[in-house]
Image (cartoon, rainbow, N blue to C red; front, top):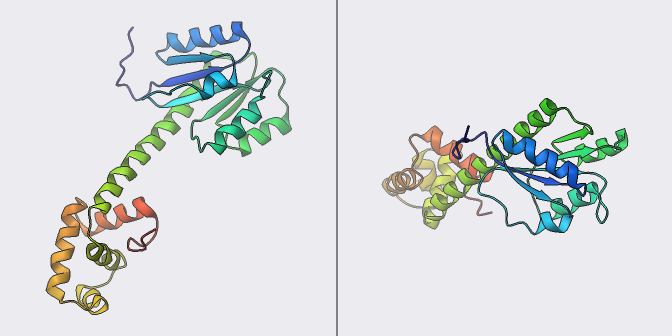
Length: 215
């Protein structure tokens, strides 16, 4: 059955392992269930990959010849990468797995790994990355709306989100209350807010701080 490319359950799985037979086996399994697979023999090969439009995750062997898996994880963290990492190793130990998980790994599996365990780990990782991608897109959209506000409209928005009445905002900004109402109407329209509660949620989602802080 041909996978539907719009299916949110699907995504790109990068396989980074210096063992050619393992790369091929993992790639074959993942493609069989509909994932796009990109196999890499070296860390450089993965790091230079242009990426994919789909949510992605990385299946990473711990023991690599040039950079080990934990070093690769550190390198990705320095790049602010959010791609979930599934470690796969034949020589893992508890301290190693604890370090990997504390550094943000999605899973730490040992070879030989059961098909069901691997696919479940991939599904969880891609679901996590898909949610992050949706959140980033939502924040980008809200930021564009917020950037369209004038300086005065942002001040009014900050007052509204803080729960202040129009007359309180007017007094603080030394403007007429009817002017506050006009600005407030413009804010609601530009932010595409359906209600005051929706506007407050947007502000919290966008910046997680008072909307008029300017940071």
